Length: 104
Image 1 (cartoon, rainbow, N blue to C red):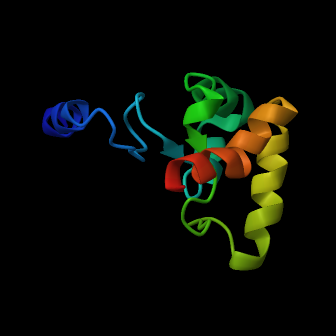
Image 2: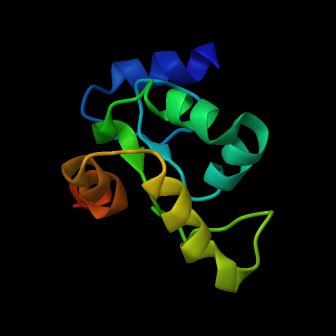
């Protein structure tokens, strides 16, 4: 992973989406239900709080899940995100603001 970090650091204006590096955007689309299953609500909240709300994205790609059927995805994600206790402003950033900023 050192090569990725080095390359990303050399492109100061490059906007990145990455699920494993703290200096990038993190897309929660697929991983959120998995985090809750493994770490529970409190553990997931603690994990997400390691990032700024400015780094978190929801659904930069179609939300998908290995655990949920397509008709269950939005209700499940909404329920999980409500339990993360983000401010209304931070929730708006995560839901659409950060993606709009990133993608233009």
